[in-house]
Amino acid sequence: MDAEGNYRSDEPGRVTFEFEHIRAVDLVDFHPQSVVDVLKVERCERGFLMSIEAAFGLQGTIEAEGVAVRFQQQEPSI
Image (cartoon, rainbow, N blue to C red; front, side, top):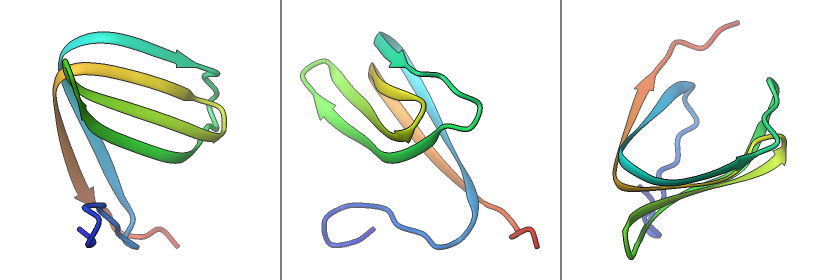
């Protein structure tokens, strides 16, 4: 975590989001090669709000009562 509370890593890995009691989903522009530019998870009045801003493809929001975030490091592929 950096001083602003953001997690940053230069290592390859898989991030998994697990939502509890999803309240709203507003996702558009599904594409098999979507490129996420900004992904935020913030507290909101009814729990948590994930916002996805795309450079290309998938974007939108998911609102849920709870969210767990897991990071699993992977070996780089050459």
